[in-house]
Image (spheres, rainbow, N blue to C red):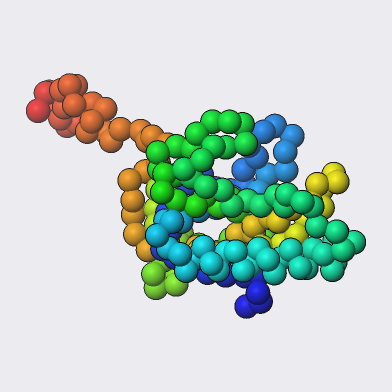
Length: 190
């Protein structure tokens, strides 16, 4: 791996769209996305991220930005105890975490595997709230005059399940708890 590519673990995943590209707003180019929630206690991961961002910045100075870095370099790394760009507080799942937004273009979908490093076929196994190791890469960009560092999503190794984030539908038993069960053969209540 190069200086801009790192593996972070174990982190929690949110806003997971790794099997189908997703566009947050109409007209936007769809991408594979995941937000990585890295516990602030994982100081080694934060150090890795800072070093990879610095390496990407150096690439930007040499190859993209004509030797000029902006005074405030935009990155996709945010403090989960702070506020989003729109002024809203991050959700409770972000508290005590670094929030890292990652994406992949449609021609390079992320690889998603289990602990045996086998591809996960059942898409229901990968949802917002799971835990895993994530391989990412940082890169410099120049878009509409704005310079920054983006984060590419390469691969995810799911390590364990977690409480689903963003709400989920109730189970069938919960949804129909007050409805009498009918025997499919007799049509009579059970």
